[in-house]
Image (cartoon, rainbow, N blue to C red):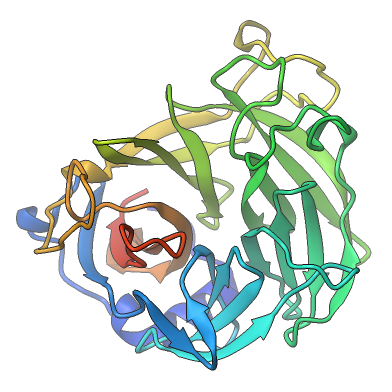
Length: 334
């Protein structure tokens, strides 16, 4: 059993209602693996609009202090979804300091309501008020910047973001140029006097052909890691892992990563989502399981009985007729 979640997550779990209501142990028909079951899915947001803004391209989720959900579009829009109905209630446009749109990928809502949003263009992490006003940026190590400024690969940098007991963690989607081909970096920032300062950096081994799409804190020092890949004519590969960065080597001063010299972030497989029951879902393109799509966002809603986690996933439809905006409700025994 994991320890209790922080108060903000616990409050969110109470407010979210249907998605977090206590349930009996999942029936075998809903099982994706011994550790993960799927409770439901919804396509209600697919190809819809709200207040003149397309509801899609969703890359990240977070629970707000009031129990509603924040859903981040990678086209510079931040939606508020009703915690019970999952329907949009509000949309706020985001922009950089020059008024230009972001390639917004990762999202954290801090304890004071500040929104921390990653962009994988530079990459960067910007801080916003709830109305979308930018109020600051976090420092980023030079090596993580996209070439030629650093060794980051364009469109493969800060894809995931989470807050774990005062430590902010951003995950690179793909390895830096020159690093071992299956090692991605997790960068941390430590909270000090109300500001985030650069902390340790850790190496995580990703499965062959996959990248890190999202990370989210479990509340006890560990992380859920979503690995994702796509093969034309076959579809998506989506795997869920439990990761523990405690004790991993600080690689912030290591120029080129090689696993032979490092203590990596420990990972334990939880489920390959292709093994989930389809629950009657349909796919608009080939998929190993019609339930699957381009799953990119993930958040922990709260605890279920027995210390299990209520987890919500979302797929990014890329505003593409062949893809679907889909929400997935899972129960995870971490």
